[in-house]
Image 1 (cartoon, rainbow, N blue to C red):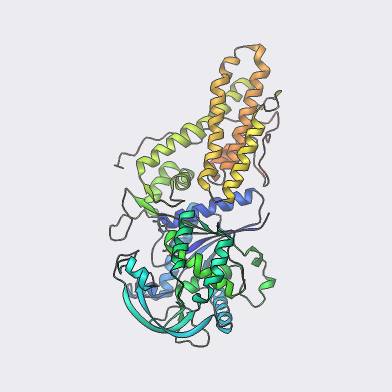
Image 2 (image 1 turned 60 degrees about the horizontal axis):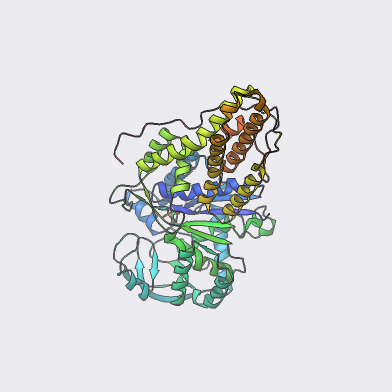
Length: 513
Ligand code: ME8
């Protein structure tokens, strides 16, 4: 299996963490855990984006240095990682020396190769996003920022530019050869549409502020925050160090998945691969651009003050547990091309239907029957699993494919369906009736052994999403797991099976929603 490198965007430190950041990081965490479970050499990176005009401005407003603001908010993000128990291997901050040094080395290489030149530029500038738009695009946007809604301003600068226009043909060939590069498909089509408008060179430096990495050789310029930021995916691997071949991490590139929100797709799907081409480095294998969480039908924004921030999230994790929160994020989130509405009533319904009544209930029911009829000892299965080994094998392959495709919803549905299958099997075979007939002892033993084995398989497949609850469940169904292909039959005859209450039934919250 190839090594498996996955990245989140690096988050701006001028904002505090909220559901959006937690969401993307959760998706990557689930994927990384799944790949580790499969035995892949996995590396999961996240971090903070600390330079740029916005940070400089916010810091000034608060009467502090940009570095102090960055330190304060990077700590907030690191705290978020801790609270959520994310399994990231590294946390990169763009103000770290390792990053600054390598970005300067990469930019020097680009300049030496002719991909970066000094030129003059005029265009429509989105001050909030620090992004230029073409005339066509600006018109489409109604000359307003698609993010903040504020008017775009006409701006003109002498700057260093990246020759994006020179990569049009190579990018087109790359997209044609890699139609799965951008997920979901709707986003791929969007990028192809914009590609047809023709590529324009992009400024890679700024002179109107100073909070950034100095442009090597012309230090009145600082490197544009987006160019600086994109390189984090490489600098974290030490891929831009003089002795990069000696780095223990450089083999992780190209990333298997770079997961982002849809608003930053152009940078990741077009500018980033072009920069990599200019550096003779491979493009990431896939970019997955998910949609947005909205709240009760409305966009979340600072002005509406309706952000689901960590304090709000904590009211859910306190009440339902962290795994239930992860479950909701993954199964009901905006993984694909449509936005997802966060409603606490819906959260409650899904928790009750899927975790309490399905996963938890099934594990408890099976454990209880093994307890009652076999003193909590895994009975022998004279039927060799019946139809279950095959059914489990197909669920496992589908799950692996779902992970490969970043279809985390399917990766949750498969094992959930397996659990539903166990419930149905119990309802059909009625072990509680068989238990009354001593002639049926072998049949009863086989049924309950099969149910236990299937609960184990499903629980293993659910560990990436529900790590602590499934660890608890597995402790009662055959013990801890080791990495490798998941297979039916992990519980030895004679092993202890325990009944457990995994997901407590909870009264719906009294607040509206
Ligand atoms: O854009 N729903 O950082 P950022 C789902 N520093 N996800 C959301 C979301 C929402 N409502 N809001 C934000 C930046 N996100 C740059 C990135 S990368 C080289 C530089 C998530 O702090 C989503 O992943 O604004 C989005 O892309 C990211 O947070 C933006 O975080």
